[in-house]
Length: 217
Image 1 (spheres, rainbow, N blue to C red):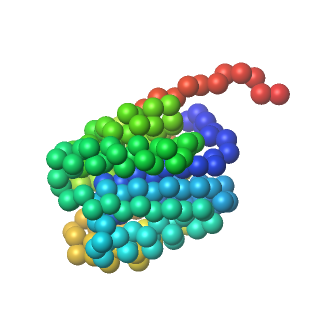
Image 2 (cartoon, rainbow, N blue to C red):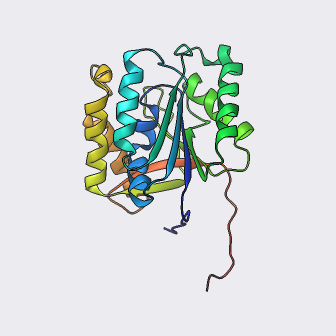
Protein backbone atom coordinates (compact mmCIF):
# COMPACT_ATOMS: atom_id res chain seq x y z
CA UNK A 1 0.00 0.00 0.00
CA UNK A 2 1.27 3.48 -0.90
CA UNK A 3 2.07 5.66 2.11
CA UNK A 4 1.64 9.44 1.99
CA UNK A 5 2.94 11.68 4.75
CA UNK A 6 1.43 14.88 6.09
CA UNK A 7 4.71 16.50 7.04
CA UNK A 8 4.82 18.47 10.24
CA UNK A 9 1.45 18.96 11.92
CA UNK A 10 1.20 22.14 13.99
CA UNK A 11 -2.57 22.52 14.38
CA UNK A 12 -5.30 19.89 14.46
CA UNK A 13 -9.06 20.27 14.85
CA UNK A 14 -11.06 17.32 16.22
CA UNK A 15 -14.85 17.46 15.97
CA UNK A 16 -17.51 15.28 17.58
CA UNK A 17 -21.26 15.33 17.86
CA UNK A 18 -21.15 13.56 21.24
CA UNK A 19 -18.64 13.07 24.02
CA UNK A 20 -16.57 9.95 23.15
CA UNK A 21 -17.08 10.21 19.34
CA UNK A 22 -13.60 11.61 18.77
CA UNK A 23 -11.91 9.07 21.03
CA UNK A 24 -13.79 6.10 19.53
CA UNK A 25 -13.24 7.15 15.93
CA UNK A 26 -9.76 8.66 16.09
CA UNK A 27 -8.29 7.95 19.52
CA UNK A 28 -5.41 5.92 18.14
CA UNK A 29 -4.67 8.62 15.59
CA UNK A 30 -4.59 11.27 18.31
CA UNK A 31 -2.21 9.13 20.38
CA UNK A 32 0.03 8.76 17.33
CA UNK A 33 0.10 12.35 16.14
CA UNK A 34 0.58 13.80 19.62
CA UNK A 35 3.52 11.45 20.20
CA UNK A 36 5.04 12.26 16.81
CA UNK A 37 4.41 16.02 16.96
CA UNK A 38 5.10 17.17 20.54
CA UNK A 39 3.41 20.46 21.34
CA UNK A 40 0.89 20.19 18.48
CA UNK A 41 -2.14 22.40 19.00
CA UNK A 42 -5.36 20.36 19.24
CA UNK A 43 -8.70 22.18 19.28
CA UNK A 44 -11.53 19.79 20.11
CA UNK A 45 -15.16 20.81 19.67
CA UNK A 46 -18.04 18.59 20.83
CA UNK A 47 -21.62 19.62 20.13
CA UNK A 48 -23.41 17.97 23.07
CA UNK A 49 -22.89 16.97 26.68
CA UNK A 50 -21.93 20.34 28.10
CA UNK A 51 -22.66 20.76 31.80
CA UNK A 52 -23.13 17.02 32.40
CA UNK A 53 -20.93 14.20 33.66
CA UNK A 54 -20.14 13.46 30.06
CA UNK A 55 -18.28 16.76 29.68
CA UNK A 56 -16.01 15.86 32.60
CA UNK A 57 -15.39 12.45 31.03
CA UNK A 58 -14.57 14.02 27.69
CA UNK A 59 -12.11 16.53 29.09
CA UNK A 60 -10.25 13.86 31.06
CA UNK A 61 -10.25 11.45 28.12
CA UNK A 62 -8.96 13.92 25.55
CA UNK A 63 -6.25 15.05 27.95
CA UNK A 64 -5.11 11.42 28.12
CA UNK A 65 -5.33 10.88 24.37
CA UNK A 66 -3.52 14.16 23.62
CA UNK A 67 -0.64 14.05 26.10
CA UNK A 68 2.05 16.57 25.24
CA UNK A 69 -0.31 18.59 23.07
CA UNK A 70 -1.51 22.15 23.52
CA UNK A 71 -5.12 21.09 24.00
CA UNK A 72 -8.30 23.15 24.17
CA UNK A 73 -11.66 21.39 24.58
CA UNK A 74 -15.05 23.03 24.01
CA UNK A 75 -18.22 21.08 24.85
CA UNK A 76 -21.54 22.62 23.82
CA UNK A 77 -25.03 21.90 25.14
CA UNK A 78 -26.93 20.98 21.97
CA UNK A 79 -29.48 18.22 22.71
CA UNK A 80 -28.38 14.71 21.78
CA UNK A 81 -30.21 13.34 18.75
CA UNK A 82 -31.63 16.72 17.72
CA UNK A 83 -28.81 18.18 15.65
CA UNK A 84 -30.87 19.10 12.54
CA UNK A 85 -32.96 21.48 14.64
CA UNK A 86 -29.83 23.26 15.90
CA UNK A 87 -27.95 23.69 12.64
CA UNK A 88 -27.31 27.40 13.11
CA UNK A 89 -25.77 26.97 16.57
CA UNK A 90 -23.46 24.26 15.29
CA UNK A 91 -22.47 26.29 12.24
CA UNK A 92 -21.71 29.32 14.40
CA UNK A 93 -19.55 27.22 16.71
CA UNK A 94 -17.53 25.86 13.79
CA UNK A 95 -17.11 29.32 12.30
CA UNK A 96 -15.94 30.69 15.63
CA UNK A 97 -13.40 27.88 15.86
CA UNK A 98 -12.22 28.55 12.31
CA UNK A 99 -11.56 32.18 13.18
CA UNK A 100 -9.27 31.00 15.97
CA UNK A 101 -7.25 28.40 14.07
CA UNK A 102 -6.05 27.39 10.62
CA UNK A 103 -5.52 23.64 11.06
CA UNK A 104 -3.30 21.30 9.09
CA UNK A 105 -5.78 18.47 9.71
CA UNK A 106 -9.48 18.19 10.60
CA UNK A 107 -10.87 15.01 12.16
CA UNK A 108 -14.64 14.65 11.92
CA UNK A 109 -17.44 12.08 11.62
CA UNK A 110 -18.28 10.51 8.25
CA UNK A 111 -20.69 12.19 5.86
CA UNK A 112 -22.10 8.69 5.22
CA UNK A 113 -22.71 8.00 8.93
CA UNK A 114 -26.26 6.79 9.60
CA UNK A 115 -26.61 8.82 12.83
CA UNK A 116 -28.15 12.19 12.00
CA UNK A 117 -25.97 14.08 14.49
CA UNK A 118 -22.75 12.63 13.07
CA UNK A 119 -23.89 13.11 9.49
CA UNK A 120 -25.04 16.66 10.07
CA UNK A 121 -21.76 17.72 11.64
CA UNK A 122 -19.77 16.07 8.86
CA UNK A 123 -21.75 17.98 6.26
CA UNK A 124 -20.93 21.30 7.91
CA UNK A 125 -17.17 20.78 8.03
CA UNK A 126 -16.33 21.51 4.36
CA UNK A 127 -18.50 24.63 4.46
CA UNK A 128 -16.23 26.09 7.14
CA UNK A 129 -12.86 24.35 6.71
CA UNK A 130 -13.00 24.57 2.94
CA UNK A 131 -9.37 24.03 1.95
CA UNK A 132 -8.20 21.76 4.74
CA UNK A 133 -7.32 18.09 4.88
CA UNK A 134 -10.41 16.42 6.38
CA UNK A 135 -10.31 12.82 7.58
CA UNK A 136 -13.72 11.39 8.48
CA UNK A 137 -13.57 8.76 11.22
CA UNK A 138 -15.95 5.82 11.62
CA UNK A 139 -18.02 4.61 14.56
CA UNK A 140 -19.46 1.09 14.52
CA UNK A 141 -23.18 0.91 15.37
CA UNK A 142 -26.27 -1.22 14.92
CA UNK A 143 -27.13 0.62 11.66
CA UNK A 144 -24.37 -1.31 9.88
CA UNK A 145 -23.13 1.79 8.08
CA UNK A 146 -19.41 0.98 7.84
CA UNK A 147 -18.07 1.45 4.34
CA UNK A 148 -14.89 1.07 2.31
CA UNK A 149 -12.47 3.65 3.72
CA UNK A 150 -9.89 5.46 1.62
CA UNK A 151 -7.24 6.24 4.23
CA UNK A 152 -5.69 4.36 7.14
CA UNK A 153 -3.54 5.22 10.15
CA UNK A 154 -1.67 2.05 11.25
CA UNK A 155 -1.55 1.39 14.99
CA UNK A 156 1.01 -0.73 16.78
CA UNK A 157 -0.48 -3.44 19.03
CA UNK A 158 0.55 -1.42 22.06
CA UNK A 159 -1.12 1.74 20.78
CA UNK A 160 -4.29 -0.11 19.85
CA UNK A 161 -4.42 -1.56 23.37
CA UNK A 162 -3.78 1.89 24.84
CA UNK A 163 -6.76 3.26 22.93
CA UNK A 164 -9.07 0.54 24.23
CA UNK A 165 -7.78 0.96 27.79
CA UNK A 166 -8.34 4.72 27.74
CA UNK A 167 -11.84 4.32 26.32
CA UNK A 168 -12.76 1.94 29.11
CA UNK A 169 -11.07 4.05 31.76
CA UNK A 170 -12.44 7.47 30.91
CA UNK A 171 -16.04 6.87 29.86
CA UNK A 172 -17.66 4.95 32.75
CA UNK A 173 -21.08 6.29 31.75
CA UNK A 174 -20.90 4.18 28.58
CA UNK A 175 -19.77 0.86 30.00
CA UNK A 176 -23.32 -0.49 30.29
CA UNK A 177 -23.86 -0.29 26.55
CA UNK A 178 -23.65 -3.71 24.83
CA UNK A 179 -21.43 -2.41 22.03
CA UNK A 180 -18.99 -0.58 24.28
CA UNK A 181 -16.38 -3.27 24.84
CA UNK A 182 -12.84 -4.29 24.07
CA UNK A 183 -13.81 -6.82 21.41
CA UNK A 184 -15.73 -4.26 19.37
CA UNK A 185 -12.99 -1.62 19.42
CA UNK A 186 -10.07 -3.96 18.87
CA UNK A 187 -11.97 -6.09 16.35
CA UNK A 188 -12.66 -3.18 14.03
CA UNK A 189 -9.04 -2.04 14.37
CA UNK A 190 -7.91 -5.54 13.42
CA UNK A 191 -10.11 -5.61 10.31
CA UNK A 192 -8.85 -2.21 9.21
CA UNK A 193 -5.30 -3.39 9.88
CA UNK A 194 -5.83 -6.35 7.54
CA UNK A 195 -7.04 -3.97 4.83
CA UNK A 196 -3.87 -1.88 4.97
CA UNK A 197 -1.36 -4.65 5.60
CA UNK A 198 -0.83 -3.88 9.28
CA UNK A 199 -1.83 -5.49 12.57
CA UNK A 200 -4.20 -2.72 13.61
CA UNK A 201 -5.37 0.56 12.10
CA UNK A 202 -7.98 3.29 12.21
CA UNK A 203 -9.72 4.03 8.93
CA UNK A 204 -11.09 7.23 7.45
CA UNK A 205 -13.04 8.55 4.52
CA UNK A 206 -11.14 11.23 2.64
CA UNK A 207 -12.73 14.32 1.14
CA UNK A 208 -10.08 15.87 -1.10
CA UNK A 209 -6.36 15.44 -1.51
CA UNK A 210 -4.00 17.41 -3.77
CA UNK A 211 -0.92 15.37 -4.64
CA UNK A 212 2.45 17.08 -4.89
CA UNK A 213 4.44 15.05 -7.43
CA UNK A 214 7.45 17.36 -7.37
CA UNK A 215 10.73 15.47 -6.94
CA UNK A 216 12.15 16.05 -3.49
CA UNK A 217 15.94 16.32 -3.57
